[in-house]
Image 1: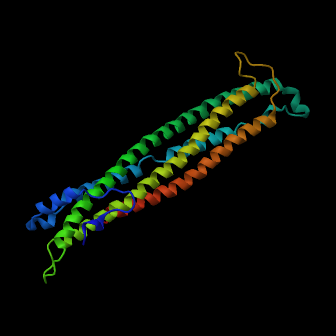
Image 2: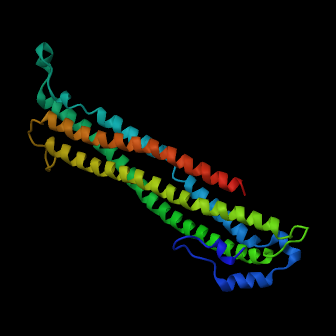
Image 3: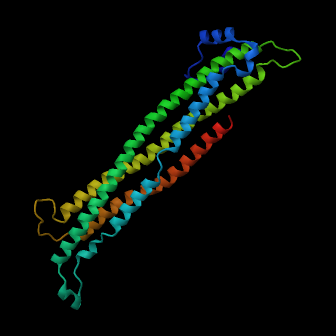
Length: 278
């Protein structure tokens, strides 16, 4: 088999010819069973690192935070600003209800702000994890290139061997081929993990931004933007529209969360299967 048989397609790197030559010349037949062991072990270790990174960043906490924010927002009902009618209204007033509603809003805004901080922190964590996955992707690719150099050297050793007994390097080469295939197959899975994170991070960022907009808009609508509360008659329809916009963002994020969990489980399962096969 020619050296070039192990070259990647497209613009991917090929093993260095000088390295292949050095490996070929240093080969010792009595060590065929351990040929290229450092290269094989390095590839396995990089796949394990990729799997470990893919398993980090549990989405359970994000789900809990989003669900909590949704519950808090749903409890804020603008219709509560309207006094009761009939006899019950004799002991009710818009002023009293506005005061109570403002207090409920203040508690809710603090809670939603806390959720937004958690989401922003998760987004920042995704950025760090993406950097780690970029690093391990490069390391896996480099491990494949190193394996390619050893496989090319092994192919040269096996070229023309037609004896009845199998060449002592043949079985080892098959094991290295399997390791290379697993490492190569892990590369798109690493990218898949990054894509999954990026999509959900975008949804959470949208929620965090929506939370800030909702807080400020409701604060203004309730006459709380200045130093002292203003005498206002809030527009219930506006309050409801602003609240429902944030709820819709949260619902989209929860939907994306469910999809992200499924995609992540698939990536983790396939990486685990590749590692198990080695």
